[in-house]
Length: 464
Ligand code: 9MR
Image (cartoon, rainbow, N blue to C red):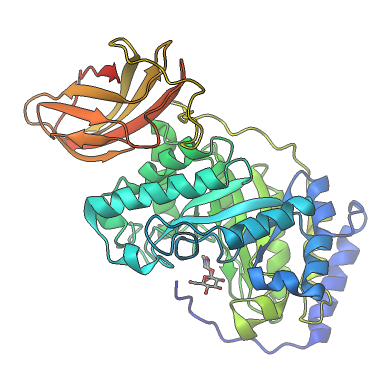
C-alpha cells in the first residue's frame, strides 16, 4: 500500500512527557498494577503483540523487549505469499517456523499474516489470472494454513481487498478479477485447513466510520448472514496526527455483527499527539468487549517500515517512550473482559474438514450410498451462491462427486473447493485433492456461484 506520509510535527520531548505525566495522575486511582504491556493486557483478557522481522531475532536489545513486553507476535513479512511459495507448489516455511518456535518458547501466541494480498505476491502468481489463479490461490491458502495448523491464534486470511476513497468498493486486483466470491472462497479454504484458527479480514484506512470501512462492514454482515466462516476483523491503524472521533464506534459496529475485532498494525506519526493517539486507540479497544488484542507494527522506532516517523513505543536504544507509558496506563485503566467464543453465524457453521495431510486411518471401500449432500442457497434477482455440505457415510470416502440439476436459464460461473464439470443443466462437482478423503460421518463444504435461479435444486452425492 502507499500510505501518504504526513509531515512530522516538531514537538519537544518535554511537551510529550508532560502529556504522559498528566495521564498518569488522572488514571492512577483506578489503575491496576500491570507493569508491562503484556501483563496489563493479559489482566484485561487481551493480548499485546508486535510485528517481528525475522532478522531482528538475533538482536539482543530487540529480543529482550519483545519477550518482556509482548505476548503475541506476527510475521512482518515471513508468512506472506512471496515468502512461503516462491515458486508454484514449492513451499518455504523457514521464516514462519522460526517465528512460531520463538513464540512457543516464550509463551507468545501467533497471528498469521497474510494468506492472500494483492501485494507481495510471487512473480508467478502476479502473472496468473482467471481459474488458474483461483485454484493456485485456494491451494496456497490450504497448504499454508495446513502447515501452521494448530499454531495460529488468528489468520489474516485476506488483506487490503477494499479500495481507498469514497467508493466503498473492492479494490481491483488479479485476485478480485477471478470473481467477487474470491474472499469467501479463501475463508472456506482456511477454515477447512485450520478449524481452530480465528479467521480475519484485515485492512487500513478503516479508522472510523467512512466509505471504506462501511464497504467492509457490509461484506462482513453479508458473510455472517450467509454463514461464511469469518471470525474477526483487523484494523491496521497506521495513524497520522489525529484519531477519528468515531474510532471506537466503528470497532463497536463490527463487534455487533458477532465478530471479534483487533488492532493489528498500530503505529502513529510522532509529534505532540503521539502519546494521546496511542492511548486513544488503546482505550477504544478496551471499551469494546470484543476487541481482543492490539499489535504494534514493530517494536522500536528504528524497526518500523515508517522510517523517520518514529512511529512506535520504544526508542532505538530500547528506552520506553511517552507513548509507551500512555498505552500502559490505558491498559491498566480499562475494563477487563473474559474472551468469549465467536458467535456462530446464523446459517451454516464453518466446515470441519480434516486437513489434507491427515487421511482417514483406513481406506474406505467405495459404495453407492457413501455420502449425502445438502445445499444452502443465498439468492438474489438474477443470481445465487450455493454452499454445499458433503457428509460421508459410515464407510467414509476416498473421493466424492455431487450432481445438481439447475433449472433452465441458470448457469454456474464460479466454484470453490470442488471442480465443476459443465455449467448448465446437470452440473457435476468433484472433490479437489485435499477434501476427497473423509472419515465416517465427516463433513466438508464446497460452493458455487451462478446466474439465474437455483431455487429447489437437490444435490445428489456419490462416493468413490
Ligand atoms: O512492514 C512491511 C514491510 O517490511 C514490507 O516491505 C511491506 C511490503 O509491502 O509490507 C509491510 O507491511 C505491511 C503489511 O504487511 C500490510 N499492511 C501495511 C504494512 C505496511 O506497509
